[in-house]
Length: 176
Image 1 (cartoon, rainbow, N blue to C red):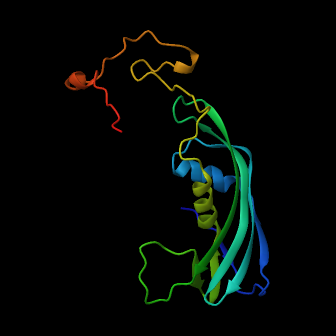
Image 2 (cartoon, rainbow, N blue to C red):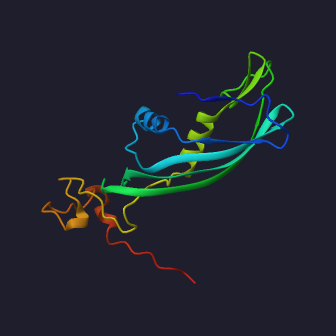
Image 3 (cartoon, rainbow, N blue to C red):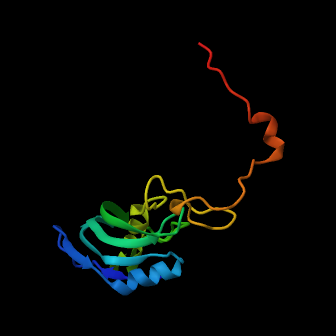
């Protein structure tokens, strides 16, 4: 994973604002994780880093628009991202063992923040769970692959699992 470490050692107490809009970073990440995303408008972030005792408070906004395949029919869908974020990252002490590496490190006597990992995490959190071209998207036929939004296919309709045939006519009455 590409890292983008920012030196935040000499930031004043009121904080400093940073901008991040590297097109290659996003394209590389989408390719690395085999995501079918493409930027429609550039992904950009502005954030302020305020130093804290053995940590940093980061507040910002990630925005842009991407194209991704619909989860049901695979047509391109436009997903607009406008995600504010607010996080506190604490520097781990050297004797602490962590399963996941932190976003903050001490390196050669300098305090550094991994802006790339932070922004990637915020991007993934901003994505819809299932991007759809429309709420009533019918998807693809599981047999022939035809887009069912364009009309029915010629495949025979399956009656379902034969072992469940006895339950097909079952109705449940609500008791008062």
